[in-house]
Amino acid sequence: MSCSSFRSAASLLLSIVSVITLASCSSSLPAAIAITHVTVIDGAGTAQLPDSNVILVGARILAVGPSASTEIPRGARIVDGSGKFLIPGLADMHLHLTGAGEPTGSREFIIPLLVANGITTVRDMGGKVEYLKKLRAEIDSGKRIGPEILFTGPYLDGNPPSFQPSIVVQNAAEAAAAVQRLKGEGVDFIKVQSRLQPQAYYAIARESLKQNIRYVGHVPDSITAAAASDAGQASIEHLTGVLLGCSTREEELRQRQLQRPPPGETLRQRLTRIRISERDLLDSYSQEKALRLFRKFAANRTWQVPTFPLLIYNPMGIPLVFGRMQNRMDKYLPKSVRAIWEDGRSQGLGGGVNSKNIPDYYKGFFELQDLLEQKEYEVVRGMNEAGVSIMAGTDATAPMVFPGFSLHEDLAYLVKAGLTPMQALQAATSRPAEFLGRSAEQGTIEPGKRADLVLLEANPLVDIRNTQTIAAVVINGKFLSRGDLDEMLAGVERFAASH
Image (cartoon, rainbow, N blue to C red):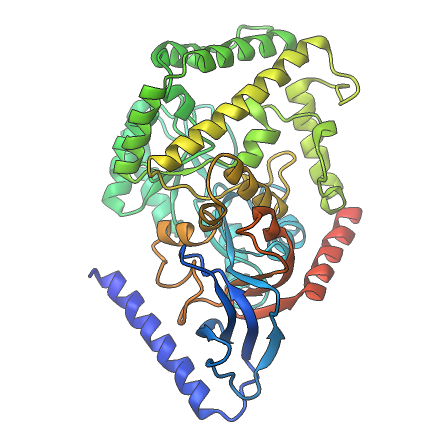
């Protein structure tokens, strides 16, 4: 056992001993919560536990067992779970807390939406270190209710970078310096982006290994997905490079992708060029090549975060028109964020385009998107069957990807892709805990683990969309009733109306 694993195990044992001592010695336990007669879906993939009591003391789970034999501490707050279902707190493993403006954007808009949707852990995949550290400190200290935050800080990218904040890395020396800097600033992962050149990318891989920090993100345009997996990339986001890696014309299409757009290219010419490339990608898909790639991912433990909400609402990197949005949570969207999304739509599809005014040359674009969507489901299904580890993530706040709500959409898309409801649920609970090296702390409902839980009105194993029937959330031991969550949402709605 490593020193860090030993310390984690010792800390967990001390925690369990502490809460047991508290339970036995105190005549009144105002901090204790008992969720009674509930059906527990523990996230470990085991059978459901009907008519169970779950006892919480502080920020830990004290006991899980049959209601007939699991004693409720005196003074505990009793929550009747009859007819309800208890799952672990959910994790969104790809979002951007600073993507909607800062500092009030995250605090007043994103964080409450995450909590109200049962999200208790997030992995921020690109933002400013100083702000993320401050936000995390506010949550960890109890000053603010919010999910546990892990983050990458700025992207490492080529010149010019795709997004900000970025650190431009063009050679081995710059790569080593960037990884060392970010490690020193306390990031949890290194994030690689699409425009990195091979020399810089492989140097990042070597330095990350040397610094004992994992690197995650996009497969750069100049690198194959197979090479990224072999180099040690811990997770691949948005299926970047995966479809290309399944093509019999992979290198030809990669070189075409690397070519700069011709000067003066019109929007219509751009869409035509994209359509031709994506059509060639679909037509050259090889089941045999795909299986070889998926087996490599499984052997190398290269995790995948498809981020279906991004793929569905921002196909080929172009935000869809707002008219295609269905049941979207517009009232929670600040006007300033809507303006950003509208600007992205205008740049991607041209001004004046809406659901009632789509030029003929867009129709082929949308038809192709439908074909690509089906192929992406096929790819995720194939990876799952090959034993590739998959996690849930959304890329909120990309255009039309709402924080919180979009994670439930992602779970539904994962089931549509072929995962079972249990596997989809695990993609947002026990699998992220495993990826983070925190299985001893979170991800399942077991004694000694963090009290991060979601109480549901309906069974998500019957219909994964039932993860949206939230009756209450427990986050780091704090119980939030449906009324509390509704007040959070009302606060976001008020903030959205004035910002």
